[in-house]
Amino acid sequence: MPRLIDASRCPHCNEDLPDPMPRVCPACAGSLQQRFLRTGCLTSAPLLLLTAGTLWFVEHLLRG
Image (tube, rainbow, N blue to C red; front, side, top):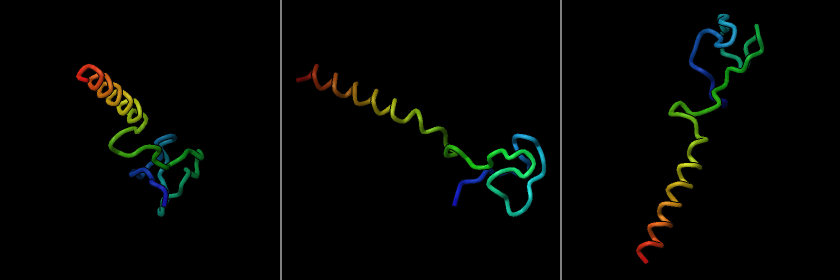
């Protein structure tokens, strides 16, 4: 099941949405699916892991 936005109106055209909520707005065809988790975008996770791995590697080289 797709993750749908929690709203009664379309965020694109501000039209009322029917029940049950469709995947796209019937008025403007805008997507009503959430692209990312509510906690935030996951695109920053690889950069964070790369930075942490690099710091760990540098620390390992300096100690040993």
